[in-house]
Amino acid sequence: MNLRDLLQGRTTLAKERGLSDACLTALQHDAINLWANGRSDDALILLRGLRALDPTHLVTLRLLGQLLAERGVGQEALSYLDQALKMRSNSPSLRVTRAQLRLAIGKDIRGAIHDLQIAADHKGTAFGDHAHILLRKIASGPQPT
Image 1 (cartoon, rainbow, N blue to C red):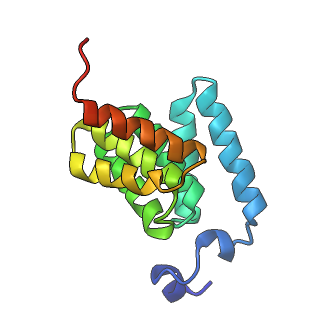
Image 2: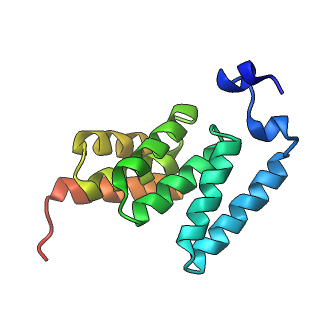
């Protein structure tokens, strides 16, 4: 293993150990199943391990962001979603997810609106349509409770 390449991000531990994308995907599905069955602590441990194997794997970063957001760890969740968006900046699903988190924690409302505007450009997709709905809600102001 070339430690220099690993430290400089030119390779990942997963690649060095011969783990295929199919293997990583299977482990991500295991994490999702754990999470869905109320074992979010175990899912988080597995996802953090997957991130150690490949710190740039988009799905792992998205799942970490979503799980941590659900657990109320907003800042850390945002950092994972930010990393994922650096790799796929035009992803409407990532944009909507980050916007919802920003709105939920009251951080960077302008950034949330910007994310939704970018996602809304994907008309006719589920996340593009969802972004339009959220933008209309924001424009109409706070809703009475």
